[in-house]
Structures are given as structure tokens and as C-alpha cells.
Length: 221
View (cartoon, rainbow, N blue to C red):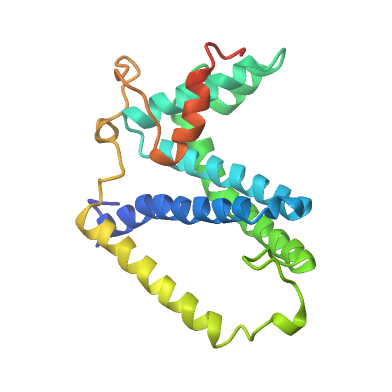
């Protein structure tokens, strides 16, 4: 897309850095939910947790698609974790790979999942909002009475519009001036199954999960 499509480089960097921007907003949202004790609304919170895992799965599969060194070895390491499932683990891994190692069949499967999962995420977001409208959101004052409410427009529409403009400005600043700041240089090297990078590390938004993984001495725990 970078070589054969007009402004393909822009589309590619907006897509890649858009994932980082999406996770920044997501982590702020989760932090707010924890701070205001939104987890007491179990249905809304549980749907949110499922959404988080679905988004992480989509991002991981998208990270594999460029087929660089980090993409290939990240896919190899993470999918191999499933082999720790008793009895059926190795079968699941081979089904995901489409063979006996990460290869072109794996890439085809990951592309299909990467395309399909956003539609499932959109449906889950609607369910998340339905539960949120049933319970009402938490707020700094802890109030939920009609007497204390104000109209959504113009108060929140103006405030949110300014927030969106600032977010788009920061996003385009990142895309146009620092497009590779959040990426890994090793991922520009084409995937080579015979050459393992000295340090295999995920994108920054997976570092918390990576820390959990590194704290366990082997995949059986």
C-alpha cells in the first residue's frame, strides 16, 4: 500500500498509529471506570472486559499482518502459549497456524479475524451502551437524580467537540511528524524463521500483559 497506492503511506501510518491512539483512550476510560468504582455495575463492567480482550485480539492480529521480524516471532510466541491447554492445546495451535508453524496460512487466518472482529466489537459496544443506559454512569459527585442533570446539548457537545479536535490534532502530529515513534525498527526487517531477534517485545499497549507473561517461569505456570 505504501508503494502502489496514492497516499498509501498516510493510510498505513494512520491505521498503525490509530491503534496506539485508540488504546490511549481505552486505558483512560478504564482508569476512569476504576477510579469511580464503575465495576459495581457488573453487567456493564463484564461487557467492557470482554470488549477489552476483543480489542486486544484485533490489535494483536493486525500487528502480525506486516510480516516483519517482530510480527512473525510475536505470533510464534503468543500462539504457542495455547499449547499449554491440556489435551487439545497442540491441536488448537495447529488449527490457528494452518500447519505446523506460523506461515502464509496463519497470515490468511489472522487477516480474516482482523477484519471480522471489529464488527463483533461494534455489536458489543452497543450492548455495553444499553447496559450503561440501564444503570446510568458514575460521576465525581455520585449523584443520579433528574434534578441535578443538565442538557447534553450544548454543554457536552461543545466540550466533547473541543476534545475531539485536540485528539485529531495530536494524532495527525504523530502520523505526519513521528510516524515510527511507537513502532519497533525490527519490524521493518522481513520475517525470517531462521533468525530469532535478540529481544522479542510487543507493542507498548501489550506491555502490561507482557509483564505478566515474563513473571511466569514457564507456560504451565
